[in-house]
Length: 520
Image (tube, rainbow, N blue to C red; front, side, top):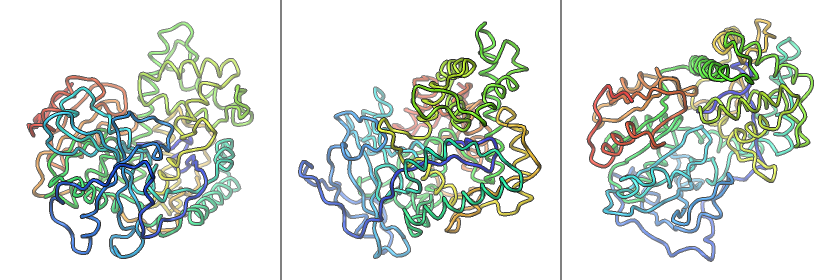
């Protein structure tokens, strides 16, 4: 799950490119080099009344070249298609939109398809068609990635800011919590929300949440010819999987949910828990760094937070120099550090970036921040941050009470001390979602579903983005099996850890659940 990248729980960094209009009811034209239409062997499973044309559609598989929205290159074995779905499932005869999917076909005796999503919310999932290469998953399943509605190659995209507006947003430190500063921040939130309406459309924003995504997933399942859904969801993809299990319990074959979110946790509690988990990851990074004589945070881990703040705080007033003429802003330094704390494999880059910053330069941290923000080589941006904002603002209730916002800010600063700029006044601006132009369509709740097969939840003990306890709670609510991985990283399934991967392969292929209490 993506993090809030400013120093308080109530502020966000946001990015975007130019707006894209909503598609009409006709599917996009087929490129001349497309393959012939390919229909599924049969539409599988029940078809909700009024949705027959969507469940019975024929897919047009083609090269993925025009689906590349994030700069990644898919292998030659991957093909892509658009699935047409209603914008509003309550009015299926109205406007339609398109959801992009990718496929790598099974190399052996096929069981069916396996749908995968990386989370975010806002991340493109097309690359997941190449996930689990070299395993029985690749042999027995067509691997299917997808971009949820409004995201990546799906059309229309959620777009709120232009490239220049994103660059400007990233330059602003946004740390002023005086009455004037709070008023300015909230004015920016209102302007951002208005831009989203103008450049995306209120109708799209209203129907871009998980409530609709799971309906799209069921259409995808059916047109692929699968009677039941097999699914792997990472991070926010676990929320999508959980919601699907609630909506379509009889259509579930198997699910692996890795890096879980607790469905009953409020957005504020979720953010505070995430802040505490990132603080743990920072502390572990600092302890590892302290073992070297050249650590930019010094050799005493107890002083690491103070040393970190001494490096980043001056950027509030003056960016660090970089080869790129933009320089390294305060916001980008924080974002770059957050990006590097997602995995121990990135700690060397964080150490290098902080060492550069100590010497007055910010190139490495800027590159890390660019990666997190979805900045492409040509200077444009993916829509990952705009989509993140749009989805989270409809998937949960906003905090509109100022006392509650003030309390949330204090709790977050206490939980994530390395992100506390020390400028707290006891007051804080309301979050962007308090000004969102459409109502939320989801709320925290305890999941209680009958008739599900055994689902598997994977949770990492020191996952900075989706804390371990959330996985414990989700597994209990789903009455599923919990796999615990002892490590410091965000998600682990099919990353090469045999103790985790082997039981998951057995579960997905043979439906042999690992049982409760597996620890790796």
